[in-house]
Image 1: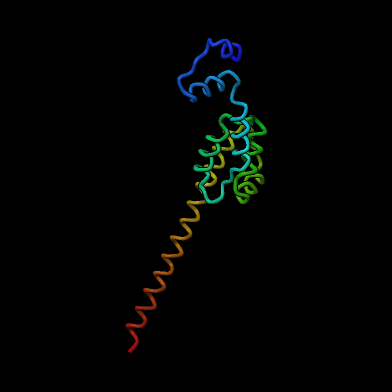
Image 2: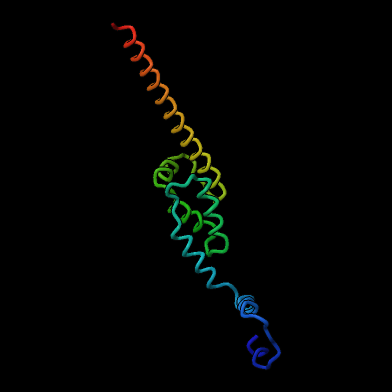
Length: 140
């Protein structure tokens, strides 16, 4: 490409065209490094596992991580509580797809259970309030 450019055989209308040709010629090595660094900084935090998996997949695409190293990064970045829970499981997971599927289901169940506990607590609170109000009405 450089020879053609110096010989005047290549001409570009815009800087974008020139940059696209350079990228095509020399590959996206820098892009891979940027994606890899972005993947290493990713954390689940308050996201649901579904949200985290989608973001992780998006960022991992085009990074240098594959196979076991991708699983290792995924485990490192998920919430510690979920990771500890899964590590106690009898059959350990292998592929990243297995991790995605299992953790998404685990997270859904945990959130559903948490929601159900909260719903029952509120119901119990309301019942207690209603009983206290009923007793107050009976007393003179």
